Picture 1 (cartoon, rainbow, N blue to C red):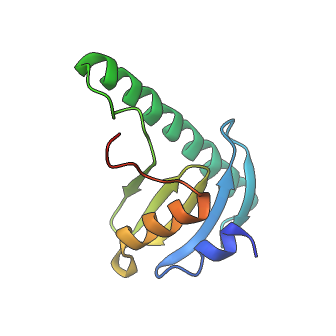
Picture 2 (tube, helix red, strand yellow; picture 1 turned 120 degrees about the vertical axis):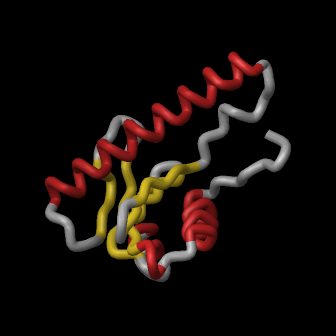
Length: 118
């Protein structure tokens, strides 16, 4: 079973996919047309790279380690949210979603371990 299929099992999930660091759609399941799914992949890649860069800059500015690790991010609106972890994305309905559960499942699926000391 694909990672996208596994992520769609999460409560509130309506779509899921994988994207490359270059912004290409690698895998997708959900009700969006291919062009919208590809746009989501580009968006997720761009935001992830931006978050990583901001972490590096904050580490330099503060002189404190631990800012550079971007494990994921989320952006939400009135009824839905997009969550990205590593190379995966998930569109969820916010009222039916536990973000702790979504981030945890996405980290596990991607093999991302969060260090408390970073």
